[in-house]
Image (cartoon, rainbow, N blue to C red; front, side, top):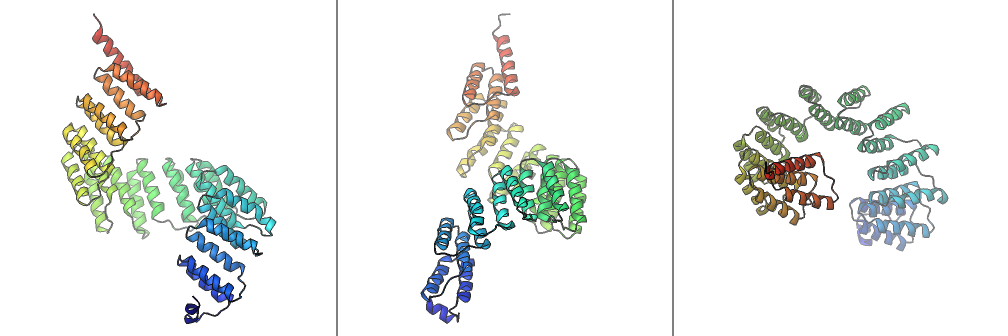
Length: 453
């Protein structure tokens, strides 16, 4: 290492060697950084707080959080005073690796070490608490931060807005947005995107459009994520024409639609049974150099199945298999399509093919085929599938039991249906209206069948 340092023409001083350590750390070869640190000590040079902080950061970057904490403790033991940057590095590292309580402990002890935390310190912990959905604790820390005279910034507010949105607290999110504006803290594109997306997902499309207008008025340029959220919201609320108008506006702003944009539109059209329109969107998509993905093809296949154009659905599926992108959802969609078209043998064949391809059917796949078997008058096959599902570690849920009990009752197997009801209750699942209705109908049919009159 000494020869390398000499060959590189690096001076034997703390400043130059600290820069070299920083380079190694950013190249994710922190061990080389420690080799330079060793040479620094050998040369009789005194490392600075910056040197220690750089190495702690290097260890955090390489996910060596335990070593980072040990080295931080070693730094303190050697009599070096960590500065706010040192604390921020170790606090951020601890938060990223789920050790938020340890980070909070360090925050509390900073003042005792003669170092005051800043907005960066608080932001790391608030963000970690928000990601753990501990919003109450995050807001408490936020309040503590302001009481200490530390002004929150756009990162603080964005973390809080994101977390309250995830919990469905849209009004609190809007209140936080208004508060940050009052404090002259300008929301960035990410802040607006978080709020717009949450409002759209909650069906509050007019509120999301108002937020979008505020965004434009404040000179914050929307991006593809902004438009995708709004287009999705409009499609969910059955405002497809408005979604297309927004797409045109998006292109007019030189923001290129991505695969997510096109998939939203294609899926909406397919669900409406407008598959030919969806195909036109796919053509435009390809012309713009955006490759359709598994989501695109699954939506198209689902659209064909809804229109009972099963042959076209199969062609799409075969294309997916050729391109090696067919997934469990794709299989489930086509199995469902076959069941609805009363092509139960084709559905069963496709189900068997899944295991040969190394795909494990999920609960939805089993539900689809079990229901299809009952509808095709094959209760024995349905029961075998139910057993197969349980033996393969797929836990039956309320939907599974609803399908099974309804199917058995319709077939006149009331005793088996009641036995399943008991099994369901043992699984701590509460029967729903569908199950009770099925059992009542089944009991009535059984009484009529066994009545001597």
